[in-house]
Image (cartoon, rainbow, N blue to C red; front, side, top):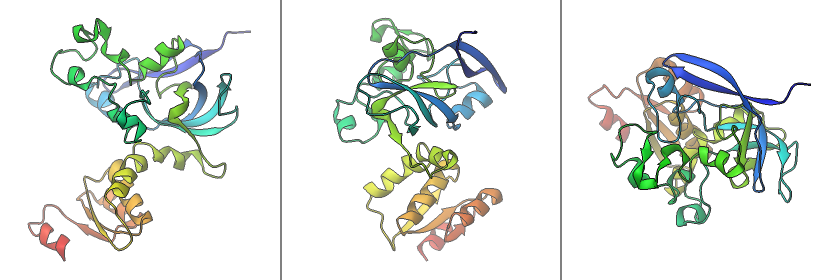
Length: 265
């Protein structure tokens, strides 16, 4: 009987993808193991297209969104095998002001952005003296930190068959909700619904959405859910047609010199 492995998707060069087998993941308490059903593409498109990386990933480790089914839990877990879940990105500390106020794992104060984005290095995966010789990917808050915490050689990243997830970053989804819709709750609908509610958007309000891609679509969906009316600035007909299907009330061409006046009327 062959040993179980974890299959991951890598992007070894621009426009190229490759599947690789890695050791099967290991978990410790406060983490669960999920069999991934859908791993949406977010910023990973820039890796595939331009081979441009952010601090938390490299060619061998990609993906941060996902939905799937829990297949392993540790003792004392609040989840059980068989739970259908969405996995939110990152590995925040859970203790800082940002985490406790549930503002965003992206802005967890344990992530040393002043080092990662301060121009202290040319290679985003070089050894950083400011981190005591640590690799940029291994800093708190990143996905590599999940593997380190579990002593695992795979599973921290989204483009994996089997993914390790911190329990505080996992949420059960209703049995009747298809995975393909639940998958939108992360970097599309999820990251746009929060600012809509924080700004107090309510029924009868108007929302102006520009830069219509998967995040812009999330703005339309969230605003319509809250009962608002939506003006979309866009020029791509395919995306504008999708915007109409999602409920956009008005479409305005931003190249029209009167677009601002149109928005006000």
